Length: 474
Image (cartoon, rainbow, N blue to C red; front, side, top):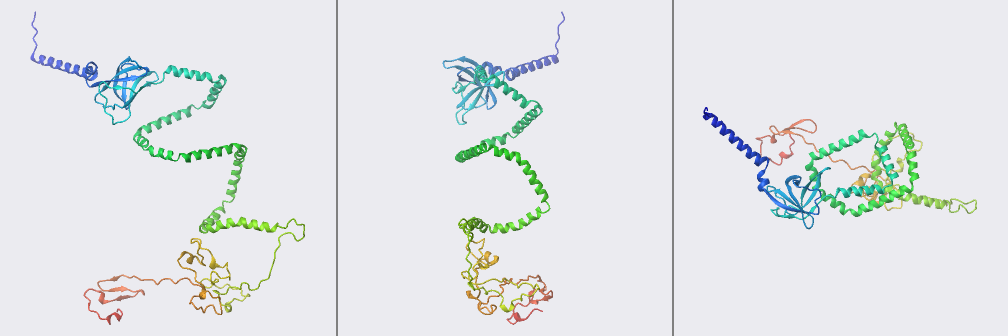
């Protein structure tokens, strides 16, 4: 028999192969098969979960914490109060001991798992041998199906058939639309997952909004009550609303046709309103008072007109008492041009109006011309009356002419120095600022000519006399 000769090179190769095989076996045993964890519990600890029933839970079921797998169910056994499940959890994941455990179905076919829900993050972590007493299981599918069956049996067959038929009519042929809704929902869910941090932040900070809703519960309740009143009124006037809906399109068409016919002139009207609107806004208080007094004035006028309408006399109707009063009160002449400047009635020319304002300039409490321009209320300053807008907007008060005495003789010869017509205040004298050359002392005057003042230049004589101040620049 020949002797097998093994070279040194072959021995080295066999030793390397044996070492690789040993390492692979250890990696497969430890990393993939996890025999140390399964046989000896290395890196794991055991806890017990109390449940009212098994709920379809089985050994080797997963145990999750915050959506992450942290262990599995090793055994399920009966106890005095229900069922006890032994859980093998990873030691590397700390789990608060104050928690609740719920059994859920991962798919419609079952595949139950245990979900650990912590109540807070301040309790100490679970340790080996701890018992989780707060456990719950999903409703029994058989009981749910029985309840559904009883509910369907309680619905009359004809009504159920009507619901199915109407649902078919409602959703028949809407496959593309429903597909778009499903696709949109999928897109929405995808976007929500991409912005999960923002949504989580929104949920975390929603407490302030919810507290606001709680604080305004009375207002929301009152709003709901008012809404109920409105809807009840709409229900009681259903025919009127139906008439609006039936006749509304025709009315809108007529309105559109009217606006089309008014298109050439409507912009002009709106532009004019844009000009007058600020004036109306300025005097809104007076307009409001006018609208308040106008119905009362109409009521008084109607009362005087119909007081004797049914007396059966030829004199029935509105009675007026006309009395002739001469020079009561006398005409106001103070503040106007003298009579010798009165234009003859036969004049047909159109001269320029005098500069300034001409109006009755007697005291505001004078019985003469009580409705004159001097008593116009200032819209921006309630309680103040003035003849011009400039006096209204300023802190100046109205001053009557000649200290309030009526006109006697020539109104231009006023005792107080006031002018007639009343002129606006003279503008302030303009101030001219011109640049100059500091090297030569030359500058351009207001008349456009160049002047030179040598004492402004560097090196000029510093000792000046008072006579030099009186000498004009060259």
